[in-house]
Length: 78
Image (spheres, rainbow, N blue to C red):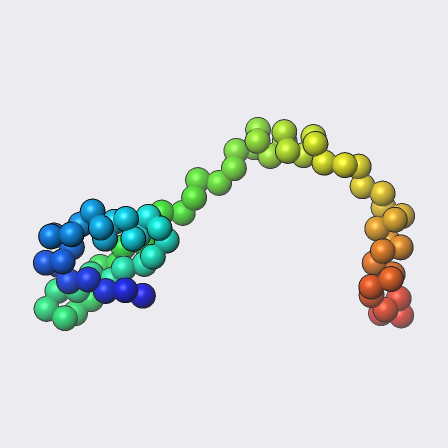
């Protein structure tokens, strides 16, 4: 995790924020001691409407074919 001091944050705040937006976590220090952490915000996720629309385009599941494929890969005695 990267560190920046308060002066660097003040003088180059935009650059530090750009690094955070790119996914980097940054610890802010004052007098050599950590005082804050900057990190990217979690993504908002995908809406239910988008998920349902994606689900509509999935091919149908053939349960029997799935079991046959699993039996080829997994030991049936388990």
